[in-house]
Length: 69
Image (cartoon, rainbow, N blue to C red; front, side, top):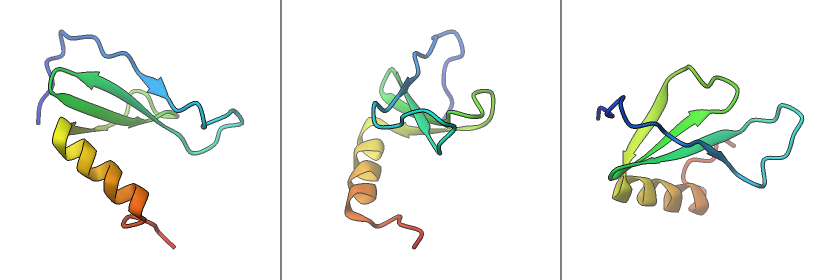
């Protein structure tokens, strides 16, 4: 999925992230998409999801499907 580079993204970090260099992600909304990146590497790669794909991904994360334990 490719984003239109002419559309500026406004990145948000979770209010639960806190400070201290913790492992955090940021999210931005683009038309019809949600974009996620590593907050410590703002110029690095990002993940782009369709709105429905992002909703499904969040449901999976909340259910523990992607736990690394």
